[in-house]
Length: 504
Ligand code: NAP
Ligand code: MG
Image 1: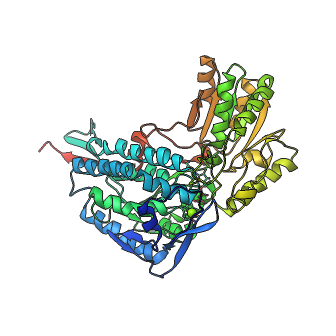
Image 2: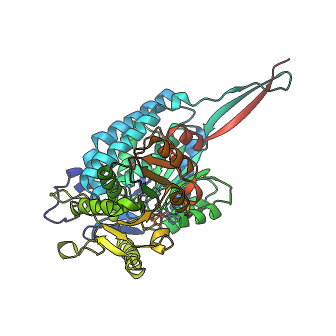
Image 3: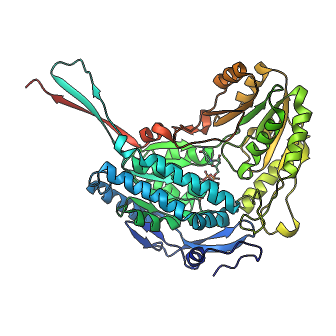
């Protein structure tokens, strides 16, 4: 049984029972150990201590799970035998179950990822449920069209059909939410899914089989394979029985995925990294902009694909904004996500990630940067975990590595700029294009800059908003395709054109 530090919130009895077993994978409606008998460990990043042992999937398990999903697809258990309205009801019921199990799912993600329990439950689980609710409305609304073709005697119409078996591969930063972003539209469009959660955060995904069963999904529609990216993930990507891969993760792994998906030319959609510019003009509400820019980077401990990690501040208000941000940062409490006294930020996800982030911080100092706040690992009571002080650097060039590469941790570089022309060129000078933001009271300027920023999402006088109804995705090396909204339905469907002779 898992023993947690004394200052943690009491575990929900179901969480305690769940963690006391070796966690199985799930396919074809059945729980199963790995064919190899192998397991891997998941740890609490706040302490580095073991939370649970998990069955480790490899090629043999991927074969079995894909077979289970394919056979359900071939018999049409979900997309043909059930009516759209019945599918809607299942998806809606799942949303309700996520909500009624929010304490359990919230604790699992808070333990596994380290994020504050309140964030895991009231943000991640809440928005996951909302996501399923939005997509629960879609099965009855996925339509084809009738096309006025010019060939005499012909009637032509289109049908929008599921792609088939979808491998969904997700990262650890919002474990349940990133999985929900993919699962909900894939299921609404009638697909059969094999989910590969991140190795560091599989717990919430492994709790889902119970909820899918209770919601009434037929066996084989939802399958989950815990395991390592280079084994289970790679086998799923290369599998000829998989019709589509939906991937969220790093640009580096995405390039591998594109290469190894060519065997059967499966569809691939990619939600990748970012290095998002956040631009503060002198005419903005500077108090709000300072608080907004602080949370644009430090929200979820900087472990957000949309983190506002390149901060550009108009020269004449540079010192004022940076000192406002330093003041706001002083109020941030860092600590284990499950501790009784609530924290705002938890640890970063792993030793590896901590060393990576600390490496970037060292680069910051080495390239002449000055840390206005933070800049160190947090030791003392928190030395067993992977805690880093929220860090604001100034005096760093645009070209420095720390300003070009995605850090995925609580580190931002603040840089002054002179005018709109200069800032657009600098903001767009990156391989990424996931998000960008600007702060100004001038509406004309806001529209002009928003139109010229090369990114999939632009935030004006705000940061970080997403909604199941609004498309989300990247320009440039931040990805292919758009999740959410009607675009996500297009991402998870094939379009069929039917021609019929009707002139006798
Ligand atoms: P990652 O290393 O790319 O891993 C993402 C997922 O891919 C994990 O499940 C991983 O398994 C798996 N994987 C690794 N190698 C694989 C391979 N060769 N074939 C198939 N799957 C493989 O990314 P991460 O470090 O977990 O997450 C951080 C990245 O995700 C950042 O770049 C961030 O910007 C991006 N992100 C993007 C969005 C978005 O919507 N655009 C949202 C969140 C995060 P393992 O767990 O075993 O490594
Ligand atoms: Mg873990």
